[in-house]
Length: 170
Image (cartoon, rainbow, N blue to C red; front, side):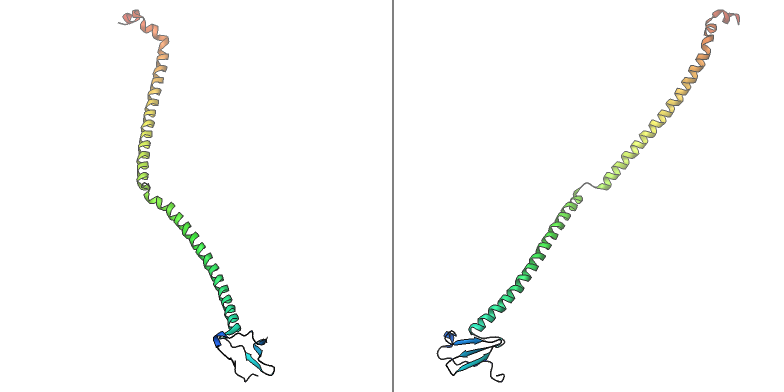
């Protein structure tokens, strides 16, 4: 049976309106046996690509199902990749949006210069204050020495106030 042709069709009438349910059919693993009459049988091996009939339809349906499975798997993978890309795009947009605002803020170097000039002014004022404070301490010490000297002179003040002593010295 291996040297017979792949398929031999004896069809009476229009081949497009062929109905294979008229004959009794036994399907084998890779072939089909069709009983045409009591003494006529037809053995046909299934071709690699069936051309028509139920086997062709089933083969096409099976290949389409396999294609659909591959395509649905590819679609799922691509959908996941698209979602991942969209999330990355959103995160990147948020990052750019938050950091782009820095470009429109005031110049930090100008603010640093302004703060440095303010610091110099405050240091100068502090230095002036310390100088004034030191001068006031010196004046306080001088006043304290003056008060001490006055306190030493105070017991003898009545002698200074006595005019008779001043006349006797003359």
